[in-house]
Image (cartoon, rainbow, N blue to C red):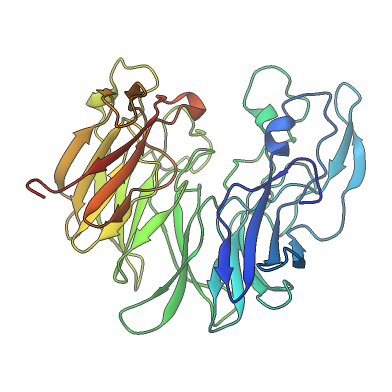
Length: 371
């Protein structure tokens, strides 16, 4: 991106000679320094020619450029609007000629209508076709997370309810395509791509927090949507959705109408007295025929029956491993991307030390017994 704090945190999408890349911004972290002039970056989506690297189009999530909006408590300049990063991969809709992307919160006030949103861009030009904003007025930086150096925390601080996952374009059993996305608010949204993102249904499965809610992704088999809800107890904010208690676990929703078909709550006893262990599902799940694999912040990888959520298999990865390359290995929290399944093998990353969770450094491969 054009900004020194721009970053690529999601994989690009490849289609018809175009590499379509999401662009996020790490000013959300840099703003923790009260001497940093927060903030001037915007999330973006860019299309590049795969043969030459030429930028074919570049869409800033926040149109225009920020204005000076005064100074913070120690006299550092403040700028707005800013933020609305695109953390995850864009989704290409060939039939409609669109690219979909999820955006995050603003970093300063005033906020914009393009934050915490699903945006649809013209595949040929990058121009905005339509936008659906799920949460308005959300402005947050890491300066809001501590007791000190809060000068770059927006006032009031927002709940930080990004769309951290890539939107899923799914064909329902009746043949209609829908756009489904989970938000850190704990809400799963189903949007109509034929009606400029009109809401078909929305279902709350969690209380939501800056760490999810639905953090990294969901899975679907074309009939059911499987959502991992984090609701990490130390991250939830009491006055956000105060009527609901945290409810971490794996949820199955009917793709047609959003009804919750079953839920499998994260077991709490495993983490009692263990530092960095959280009874929570944050990593994206992965679905195959009849089975949904979901990793937990407690370090367990579990296989759930797709029809009722019962646990078919459970493996604790928080242990030492003898590795194939001789490097000392240990598992930890399972977070971020979901398991990869190929050739009858389930591949799982174990160890995620960010956000105070259990670190680790292993890639594990599981095969069926006798396989």
